[in-house]
Each structure stands twice: as C-alpha cells, then as structure tokens.
Image (cartoon, rainbow, N blue to C red):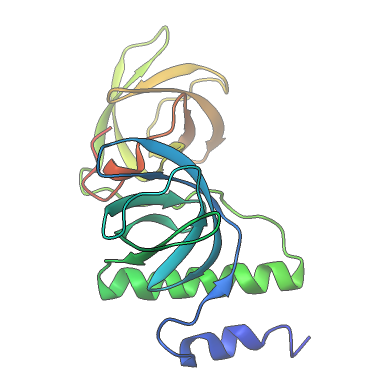
Length: 201
C-alpha cells in the first residue's frame, strides 16, 4: 500500500513537466473553429499528447476540454504518429490544479477507487439565473456549480426528477434532488471554448 501511495507524496517534487500516462476523453477546437473528439496518451501540468483524427499545424492555437481536467488551451508543438502534442498556456494556479488532479487520478486508478464526477465543475461569476420549469412559472435561482454537462442549483422549487427545464438559455432535465435545490443535466454539452467562470447559461 505504501508504494501505491507514493505518487501523492512525490508528484509535486518531480521536475516541472514530468509527464504521466493517462487516458482521458475530450474534445478540441482548432483555429478554424472545427471541433473533433480526442483522447490523451500522456499529460503534465505543462503539456499533453493526444490521439486525434485531425492534426493542426505546428504553432496553431488549440482549445480543448478533457474529462476530469476541464478546459485547457495552448499551441501545437509537435505531431505524433496518432495525433499531436500541445504546450499549454495556462496561469500558475491552473497548472497547480492540474498537478493535483493528475495526482488524484493516478492514485485513484492504483487503488481501484470508484469513478467520481466525470466533468470538472466551476462556480461562475454570475451566480443567478432564470429557471423555466415545464408546466410552472419562471424562478430566479442561484447556481451552486456548473459543468459542461449540467449544473447544481439552489432553489425552493421542487420539480419531479425527469421534469424538463430551461436554465437561462440552456435546456435540460432534473436528474437529482437534494436539500435546498436540485441537479440539472443539459440536453447538449456546453462548448469547451466558452466554459470558464464568465459563462452565461
């Protein structure tokens, strides 16, 4: 058990761009706005290599979204046999967050721990939104957190699980109730290039 937990203790002490093998599904957008699915092969807080159906040009800017990690952006620095590698352009705080997330993912796999939330969740700057509930009036609700696939909201309204709703301009349905609110699953995932704390649903 001690050796399996070693990455938790040592990851932050490794060299700045130490890469780890990890397979995460995602999507990426090239400069011409075309989007494609992809999967990581290895990743560090400073870069990521992906298996991708379409390679961009060396030096081209890329915006990508990966399960568990969230939104990243950077430029293509080299082509690989099955895709390309991205050098990330991220603030220090985001790189530190990625380092923590990678450490958690590595150790979760090593320990056989169950899957947690699939998508990164953020707390948007605009915390209030208009909620339209099918067969009911509009409600002003508070956003607890948001991911590309759904949101948790605080409200006194108590629609049944499965009820169709529109949160801002984003349609979805109620998937889970909790004390003081409920969770919504969006009908369509939010675009990763617009997914940050400034998002407006």
